[in-house]
Structures are given as structure tokens and as C-alpha cells.
Length: 161
Length: 161
Image (tube, rainbow over all chains, first blue to last red):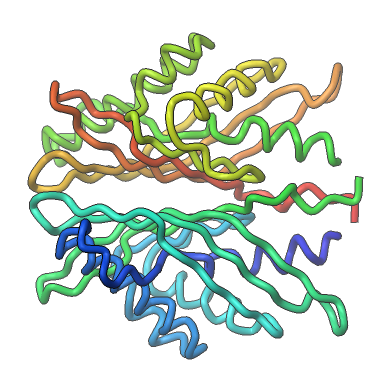
């Protein structure tokens, strides 16, 4: 089961906030904005293009993947993303259940759940599901970018014991 | 190693934001406020009194511990805290490296690292270390309370593989 654990660990930081919440009129325009940025980030991950995924991160962003130290800054985060995109047969989905934006409009969050499947080895499928929290910072040009992203699994730890 | 995994899982949500940053003049008064609340939360955990620890949570708070589903609301969070306080010989420390507050002053975050030791079984010490992200919401009375708290380990997953 160690392999599964390592694959899950390597996948880790992919499971990050997003979700489309179109038409939920109870959300403020700002909340809809941060949710839309989350959904756009998921689409960027789907391209498997590191630069596109990295473009959603603030220059000071920290990605906090399980089983790894904090990765801060675009160089460190880019290496994480590249490693993740190399995982075979990965299919990832996520959905933000909650979002909020400060009254001043420059700081927000999204939180929700993720699910992922992948290949641990040829013919050996793996999966994981869990939850995440993302803090977003609005840039000078009005775009939301990720300041912190962290998640963990709902499932028991991989264990041979 | 399963036991260690379960103990770590049970401990999980304790590893939550705090840190004293007294005298860092580069921090705004609001940032110092949210850091002080984090430090006060750590002290509340130290009492092993569930009600004191729970008092730092917003009524809508979500605690997102590894290996468990999201716990939302004081009933669910209180059960988590009670389970954690039952772990033998636990010694926990944490430190917030980063903090921020929106210009409007009602939404903030802390983020940093934790370290914990405990007994997996009589005579069998265990430990974990990792990082966390906490989102704080200022209440009508001016007190900061936890809206979201999530963390994960830096260490490889417990595994017998």
C-alpha cells in the first residue's frame, strides 16, 4: 500500500478548490467571482499545462500538499504541478460547497470536496476523496489568484498494518 | 502502523492555527489581533476543556481533519475535540508563520506549522508534524472566531507496505 500512499501524496496538491455555482442568486457578485475563478482553475488543470495552472497562483502563493513540506512561490509550486501532471490516468473533479469574500472585496475563500482516480500501477486503479480550503487574493487588475491552497483525504491512511 | 495512522487521524484537528507574534511591528493591528486569537486558541486546547476550545469556533465553523469527513457546527466539532483530548500523552505545539486580514477587517487567515507527540500504545511513542490553514471571521463583538480549519502532515503516510 505504500505505492498508493505515494501516488496519493504526489497527486495531493491537485485537489484544490473550485466549483461552478451559476445561478445561485443568494451569492454576492464577489462570491460568484471567486467561485468562477476556482472553476477556471480546474479547467486550467485539465489542460495539463503547468504554465496555465500556475497562472492562477499569486506570486506569494503557498501550496500545502499532504506528505510534503509547504511549497511557496511559483518555482516550488510549478515543480509540484509538473509532478502531478505526470501521474498516469488521473481523472479529477472537485466542487466548492462554500465561498466567501470580505466586504472590502480583496480577500476570499472557497471550500469543498474533491474526488480523483488514477493508476497506481498498470492495471491497478487507485482513488482518493477529501476536502480542501483555498484562500484567494484579488490582484490589482481584478483577477482572483490563489494565496493558500490545502486539502486532505477523507479516507483512512494507506496502511499495510 | 495502522494504529499510528488512526491515532494521528484522531489527533488530526488539533493541529490548528496559532502563534504568538508579539513585537512584530510590520504586522498591522488587525493581523496582530488574529494572531493573538490563534495563540489564545492554543492555550484553550491546552486546558483539555472541550467547551473552552469550542468557544473559539464560529457557529458555522468547519473542521477538516485528515481521514475524516468535514465536521461542521459545534456539535460535530465538539465530538472531534473530545476524541482528541482522549489521546494519551499528547504534547502539541504550533506556530503561525503568516497572517492576513482583509481591509474591511472582518475576514482573516493564519497559516503555519505544527508538531505533536503522543503515545500510540503504552511505551510506544508517536509523533507527527505538518502545516495548517485557518480562516477567521470577526464576530459582532469584535472577537475573532474560526470559520475553517484544515491541516495535513509533512510526513509520508503510515504504511506497512
